[in-house]
Image (cartoon, rainbow, N blue to C red; front, side, top):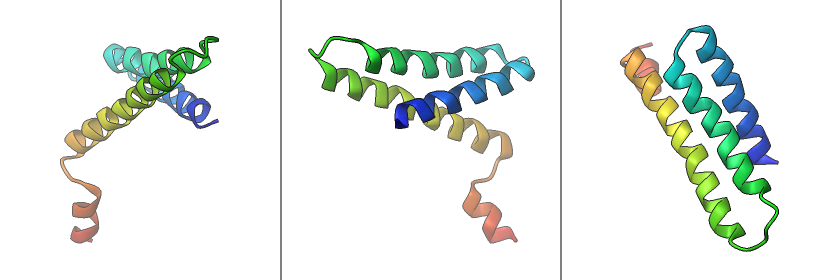
Length: 85
């Protein structure tokens, strides 16, 4: 269930990036949605734990990339914003 939620979240970001005409981020978000879903849904039971680990790593790498992007573009972390208020 969590992979489905993460995949939908990636698709929402892909739509936003497509609207902003950011092709690289759109492709990354689409890849982060489709590839882990395909890995988890693969019908073979062999190597499922490895596929699950790789899928989780891909999704968390996308979340990390988003955090890097938004921290870089705002120039401040959430803690710095809270301390300045």
